[in-house]
Image 1 (cartoon, rainbow, N blue to C red):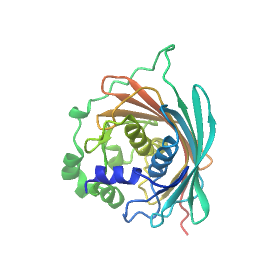
Image 2: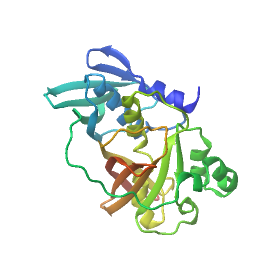
Image 3: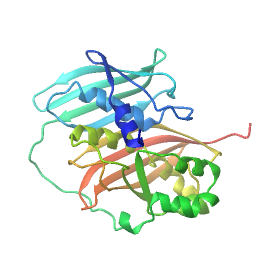
Image 4: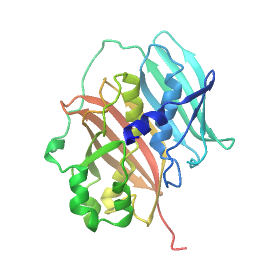
Length: 286
């Protein structure tokens, strides 16, 4: 099974009862469940209880680390079904306790005012080295944690505009951009692309808070974890085509980093926006 096929399987939740679903985690050596997986699965659960409206936003809180060896139960509360908007609340539960809570809103497409921030001028994905090229060139010099991350087959391909920041450890302004897409084609259903993007939107974002300090979440000196996550969908898109994920970190303090992201198609259309706060704590020597 390819990594993309496994991702689609993971997002295909089992229906247990009305408004009740069960998900599983990939059987890797991760010690906790990837946050984007829980966001994506929660959006799948909420969307299965909504008829005819696409999601336009979600807001979630991570409360406990997930256990990758145990299934996750998603309980959907159908808060409101209005003429234009539908609201759902989802709790993700393991071992009898909530590990994640999310509210999602759905809206019928309407005409209205339109504007967007322009896409930054960065190299296109075909002008950047592929992951395979980076592996061949840089793998021997990569720190072990980064090397192990890149060695895995993953469903999302990343092409960092500035991959050298992972190697030189130099502080930079708190911005980064990365091109993302799935490593294989996806079905045409728009809901699948939205849930896959929800999964991918948790990747690399918190790391932006460490750019200004010359660090990464791969560092053994950093304890990092997503605390909350918000995602807004603006326009239709395909997650199996290149999307530019441009990110910044306006603030870090109190062992937390605040990060934002904008996601564009190659044609420059803004399709989604993201915000997240996460834990970035220095590990104590003991």
